[in-house]
Image (cartoon, rainbow, N blue to C red; front, side, top):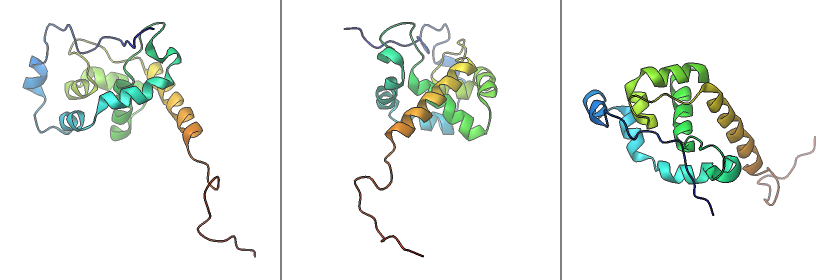
Amino acid sequence: MAKERFVETGKNSFFGDYIYDQIVPQEHFLRKLKQIIPWEQITKKLIKLYKGGGMYGRPPFDPAQVLKIDIIVYLYNISERQAEIYVNDNLSVKYFVGLAVDQKAPHHSTLTKFRKRLIERGRSEMPRPGRGRQRLYPRSRL
């Protein structure tokens, strides 16, 4: 049985975490957000969006990393194309996403495909109103 594997990010960089420790303040919002959310658990839930579960084919980006970029898109009200550039230019965002200083962000098309998968999966797992539940109020007839 194959093991989940992802694109190696945040490792094997000449700079390590030294630059992030110098540039990104300890009280920065994104640093705190990275620390308080259990991203490993999110990865386990979101890996189901990938065909083969990340075990076969080309190694995908960690789904939690792509979700982090989607969070940046939402927080800063930018497009996926702008997010790719923003992650590459902004060290605090790059730290939050989990990329090494000298690594590039995922291509914007990766972000778009991930979002579509997330929306499709969310629709299929959303509970349908009225199925298996009683109504709180009886139907009124006018």
